[in-house]
Image 1 (tube, rainbow, N blue to C red):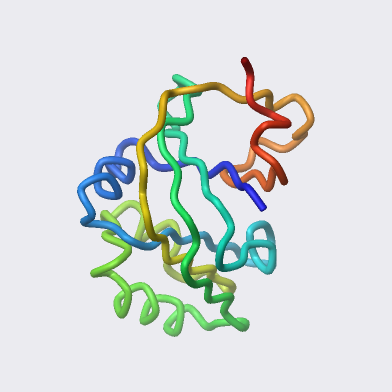
Image 2: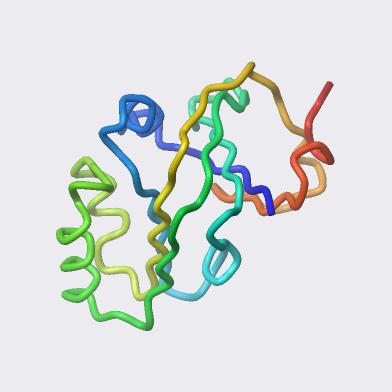
Length: 142
């Protein structure tokens, strides 16, 4: 399955993935929301920055996924700290994900830049930062 993943522009997530500093994506929530249970090894992630330009500029493949059980605030913070070398979170993202009851840790491999393209988001009612699109060609604007 293909997924469109929004990366935090201010935290330089795209640049850190590109440079190989970052090798893991995180999502967290107080409940089990996407991508919890929806992403698997072998899936393809297409990356777009949340800077308003709307262009997908790279992709990578999922090598491993950890969907946490329900966590306490302390357990959540401990997981962030244990994986900080791969997550490379800035202080703002640590605050955003620290303390969440459910975390999804997605290890990636084969980060590859691609010719930039836009997608049609009209079939996605929510303004989420993770879109399970099935097949990227169904949403790619040509």
